[in-house]
Length: 75
Image 1: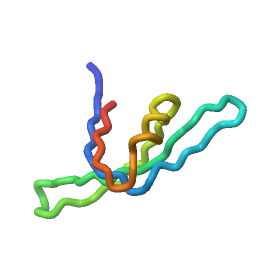
Image 2: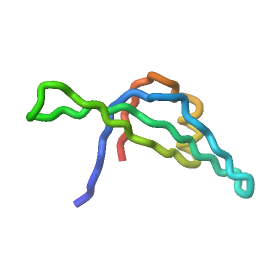
Image 3: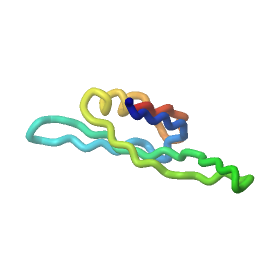
Image 4: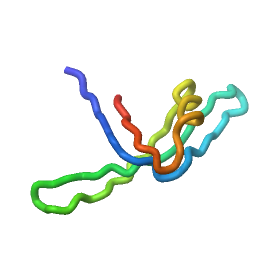
């Protein structure tokens, strides 16, 4: 049995990029706001999820992700 997670939310800030000098590898860090709904309350709460993207995925994040954009993360 595999575990998977899908998050749908909006990006809070433009991704921050860090390049590692010895290898040239990149990491793009950003956070998304995800609404959490509960049967106990009528109002939704917002949860902030920190995301780190490495390597080729970091390159795509740098090119496409901007503040406020809605994203779907699956993994």
